[in-house]
Image (spheres, rainbow, N blue to C red):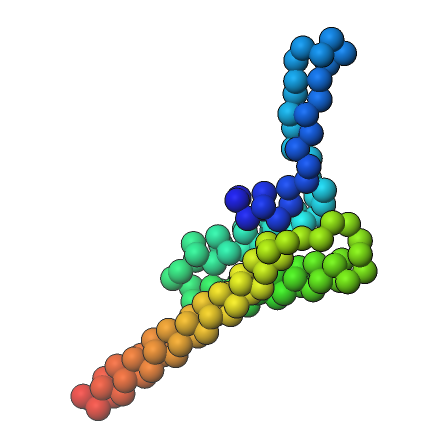
Length: 131
């Protein structure tokens, strides 16, 4: 949530009523479509954490969320280089960090799956040799 606020937060407006007595401060998002994309990305990462017993699905979700994060990074870069909207500061690197982390998680899931399959083969070979 803090990432979304840091990346997407627009300007905090303070508005006074006509009498000048009551001030209302509200935060407006400059780019709401980034909030939607970040929420989809967060849901995919959360789902990948929940389905830890299904390693193949977990690996596919991690790769898919890495692709979405890389697409978001490309979109931010395109906006920066075409000068559309405000220039995001150091928070632009967060999707790239998310992408790298998801690819490392997918690699770990793949290695776990290979280890489980090799242990299954060893068990099956022992069963055949006993008969």
